[in-house]
Image (cartoon, rainbow, N blue to C red; front, side, top):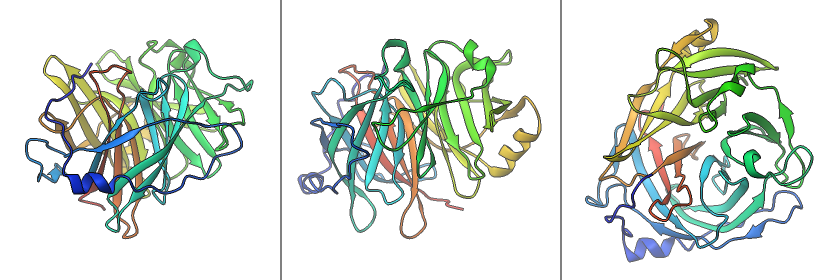
Length: 337
């Protein structure tokens, strides 16, 4: 659990006013998507030093704290942002699709989030997910017409169409995934540039402390061993067009919540794919900890701006606990190769 920082505050009245801007959101399919009230309040990267704009190899562009009295809003664990930056899609721990319209200014800074909707996720039988079925954790765009969602509890991957009223189809999962801890399964999943799926578990540990993960393609799974930072657990993955991938890690203890973003290079991924059980680790891009605006970051999304730069979006899972926050932070990758 992460305690709410007393230092969080709006950047400025003028900047806050800009957040009322929003782009219209086209409905996905014909399923009813219930409107929900969500307020977007600007936050600084470092509330104690509001002019701070860089951390590691990331340039801070914008930040929002998302506040809602709606019981279905929260627990955001997987995130996707459309290539044009106009639409946000997330999955929640309680089995809902959460969508919104996003607005960016001429410099591609995130300046608005509105038209929030919540829609129950469906099972392959066409019924809303219930109880042990609903803990959605990972979200990845498979193609223009498909999203992959990994679930914990009953560990599995389902393939969803963009329309919310069309049931998903089941996908083959690594056989040993069924033995993962109930709350430690496939937390992070992405589709790499070459089409292979990469998934890493949150707490399914090997004897040496590394975590089980897999490359998946055409129903086959190739196991790897991911080595996280000390005290950290993987929470999301996002593929880059050049074959690299970024991985988000999270940690919390008595000292508070922390997050790390690491880069998995294309060559390192290819090497891990060639050797069964290969150990895989990333290169640190940035570490987020107090006094920076940080919470339980579990969602990561990437897109390219008009200049071809990589923009990152991080979202936190508030666990539906009042003392935690839902933060949506936007960064630019400085060493964009």
